[in-house]
Image (cartoon, rainbow, N blue to C red; front, side, top):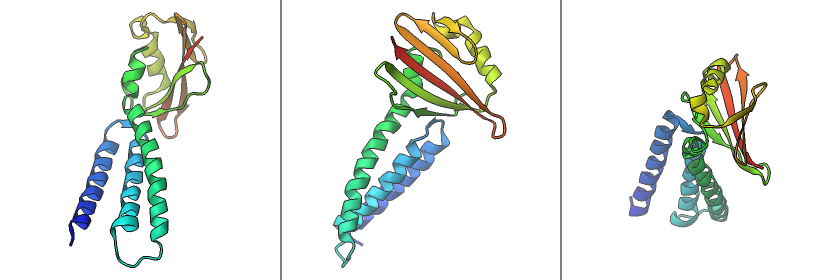
Length: 180
């Protein structure tokens, strides 16, 4: 076995192991997808450029490598943003503590600063109780409480909305921060 195959096997093993570890801890939803794309990128690189045996589909593997590389870089960016998501939200307001995962939602307008979706198994009444505590609001003024929590502070508007899915016992919290 030559050194390229050994390095390839080690990289694949590392990607699969890291993906498994990251999927076990709370965090971004995109991290397992990132490592899946990384694995496809490595495989297409190997069959497109390293493996010198006769392969009539080498051109497709090389094209796949370029495509998967671009998608992997995009997912790496999204995974990085999601990994720092709780930290970013906590710059504005106290984040609900029992979060299972976080998803980044791209900007929807020029005024949007950040938009996040957090998943929790807690009922909505616990989330509302958490935000009824003035200490968790960090000087935000409550504009509206129902059906979603709308807060204002300086030139910012923060909307916290909730969706409840009792059948699957998963609820979502949406944080939408705008500048006006």
